[in-house]
Length: 192
Image (tube, rainbow, N blue to C red; front, side, top):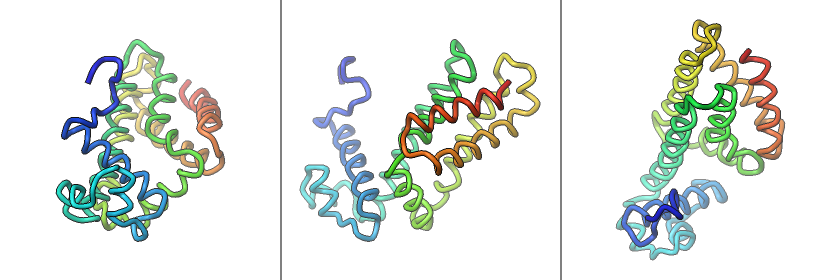
């Protein structure tokens, strides 16, 4: 992959093809739900043959779990990158971290993603609680390590308050821009 297409998987490599399939699968599962999505639907969306899809993933449940955990892994990696950039103010890093974690799912897709995670938590296993816990821990660490000495002793409480606030805002807005605007105000009020 060259520098001009950084972050875009190369569909000509096995890893790039797998990423392309996982992205198409997630979009298909979000659109139709787990039960109504067939391997044929995913194969068509990923522009791969159904037998080729079955070579990559032996069953729909395996594909579903891989697609969701892949998306969560990417979100966590983006959050880590944003939060560890000590050259930026903590408020900016927090807002960008929430955008990476939650912002991309605002709007119509938000309801489907939330419903899917809740409805199929048995298929996702520990990922349902593991990833949100990792996100909270990353926020806690960033707050504890910020240059504001008042944040360190209350970093875990601030992190949880921001998470709860973001959940409430997410339920009330329909656009990513509105989510970020309201969350920026909350961060400003909470992180003094």
